[in-house]
Length: 198
Image 1 (cartoon, rainbow, N blue to C red):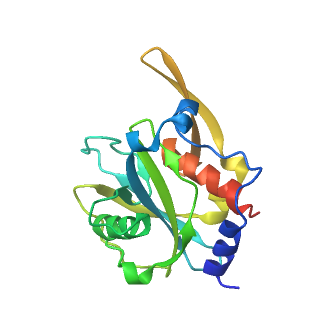
Image 2 (image 1 turned 180 degrees about the vertical axis):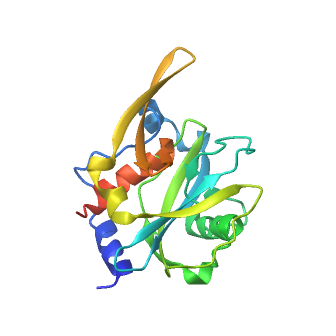
């Protein structure tokens, strides 16, 4: 069974009975979808014996989420056919990943952010060791983290911050010098629960 087939089978099992994270805050789950901006991210998984996940670090000059770790992605534009098309377009724009090299395995559970986005993660398998060209204005670095490490629940940690007098809890995953947190970490936590791989 290929990696893409394994991913498709895992996604097809559904999520009944799984404790998935719906959004940055519990009240976002109840928020009407039409009050949020549709967005999509690509979760590019490298097709190797020990698969990895390609992540980006945003530039320090970005207006929002400066310096944070993220999947390539963004809002779904009117010209995008669907979330898959948007994720592929954004990945090409941000890191130079040609859409024909992505074998889409499916979509995972949508995630709602406190910044007003309803994000669909698109799971795709890509060849290993691709030459990627980060968009200088948006992406400071592109790196790969072993899929097994990201899916290992022992690496998922709860943390919190105080913002404007309110406590905000979030997920965090540390990989070397990289701190993966917030929406990206929460989507990884959901994937770990959904895929249920050791």
